[in-house]
Amino acid sequence: MSFERFIAKHFLPKDHNHFAGPLVEIATYSIALGVVVMIMAVSILRGFQNEISRKVVGFGSHIVVNSYQMANAFEETPISINRPEVSKIKNLPEVRHIQYFANKGGMIKTDDQIQGFMMKGVDKGFDTTFFAENIVDGRLFRFDDSAASNEVVISKTMSDKLDIAVGDRLKTYFWQGDNYRARAFTVVGLYNTDLTAFDDIYIVGDIRQIQKINSWTDDQVAGYEILIRNFEQLDNAYESVMSTLDYDLTAQTIVMQNLSLFSWLELLDSNIVLILSIMAIVCIVSIVSSLLIMIFEKTSTIGVLKTLGATNTSIRKIFMHKALQIILKGVVIGNAAAFVLCFLQYRYKIISLDSSSYSMSTVPIDLNAGIFILVSIFTIAVCVTTLLIPTSYISKIDPAKTIKIE
Image 1 (cartoon, rainbow, N blue to C red):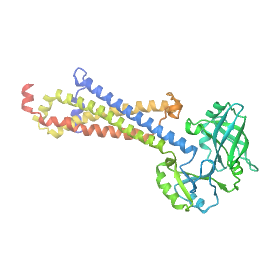
Image 2: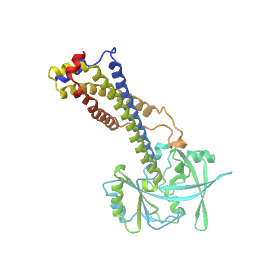
Image 3: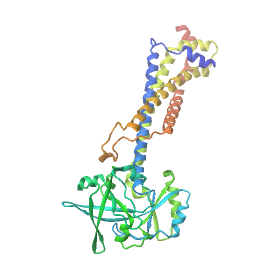
Image 4: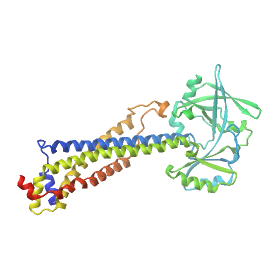
């Protein structure tokens, strides 16, 4: 054990009769509280970002490829699934999956209500993971090999609004040119994502229904939905996809399609920075004030150490060792408390939210070890760096004066 560490362990205040004693405890738990708040804030805000992104991507995909030709929402321009671009996109290293879709707007008619909607048609290759996770009643639709399936899933919101239950027949009307075409579907499942923009209008079913209504061939679709392996690489994947497309096709990322939503999610990053800054200041004030009190209380001892030959650097190390003990203890306590709170919310969904306002029913938690590690390193680094200021006072202490006073 070094000289500095030995002195820090044995002579710095542990006695609660000294003023610095309880102040050390206050500093320890202030740092712990700061760490808890920082970890909880980052975990919750990152949870919001991840959950909203997951839901939006689940409804569509990371990248959508469709015809470059301008078309309104009810008259999509078809493209073939046999184009050479498809195989090129599938072979891109960033691409995890490619699926085909078509959208068709129409109206649902009940005995006493009329509701506009958008039908999303998908094929057998559609990744149903997201919808399977969000089915609240019934099941997903099944595909019939011989004919277009009449089964659809609708949102719980739409079900409540139109008083439609699982097993009911859904009367729909689609505009096609100057006329309309009627279709009757069977509701086999209800989904709920808490995303009002989607739940209010979308029903999901067999793409062959839309192909028939639009008089398309079996190989014609509205576009390709591309799922990538890593959302962080979205821009790179988009550039790779664009480089494979012919002049008559274009692509959009999920961020481009939902710019306002993702802009709001980016604003949350500034909230994270603000919270980290405020709590870092709390930790700094706590540890600096406690260290200054320790130095003031041990002024005579510092004078004695200097008289015995200890250098200013050596004495500063003594107090830095003690301060680091306080910081580490606070960080450990804070991490333990934050983990317990995060785990309880992650596992048991204790705190609920108004889904109509927040697009989710419970507070989301990103239970990520990286957050705990980064917050701990950030707290330690900020506090230790700031300690250089109070320990500089040690060099101004005159041993002759302190010993004389004592």
